[in-house]
Length: 148
Image (cartoon, rainbow, N blue to C red):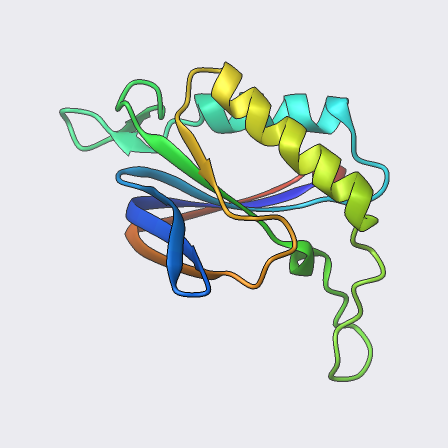
């Protein structure tokens, strides 16, 4: 499971020029799955993301987590996180999870973020989406459960 986390001041996702999900301050998550991912990987990353301390405290130190700043999450499915670019100029996506498995994992991941008390908006799995964001910092963190 791979996640690209960006701390944002605001973000939204549109499908066919219609906004389907938006947040103010919080995280934009680009989320990808492989076939070996399951509840263990989902639980691990939900815990890491919810407790990650990258928001500034009163001393301008990155010391607060998303709960402490009452932030939200915009979660976007992103199979291209598994692009293999080692050979040629056209990426291969063979490492990305089967769409049905990935969709199930994505739904479980979002449900667990919400169960952790984080307001979570989403895009639509498999849709052609346009994502807009105002990166804050910028702060961008990469998570990969293979390297955990």
